Length: 185
Image 1 (cartoon, rainbow, N blue to C red):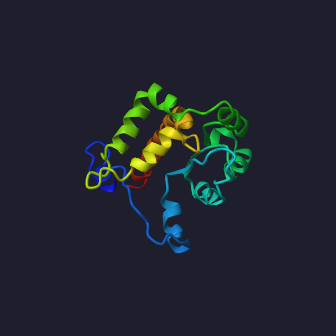
Image 2: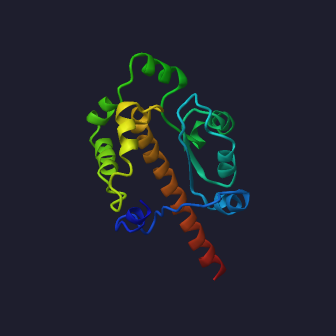
Image 3: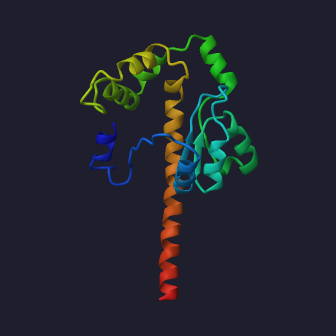
């Protein structure tokens, strides 16, 4: 996956996939302050979002996440305008599962999602071992324990919102740096 993303002509120069071996506090001390976007995307009700995401936000990262774990506390403290919440609530997850969640329905009805899952299944991101992710894609289409496909559209809309805010911030920073250079020159 790293090779495909890192060498992509459209995004390879701005997005990099890296694997951090032995992730630990000393590594976190370097990674957290350099993070622009923190993604805390556990399913609502699983309490999988811990307090690590608070460190990202405290260091200036924008946060996108579900209403789960520490994200709930963060939203209560910083307000809806300062965190990008998406996806189902716990009652909505429970209702969806009680009614018989069918992930394939979401796959079939969303061409973008279908293309992404098909690319993963067909080995696009791992051409040296094309069947590597068959277990994952088969599970997503038949069980999808964490309702990822159900939350996909809301996730993509949240990504659009956070991208807009990020671009405004980057433009403001760029203007500020140019202003300082002009002022001090």
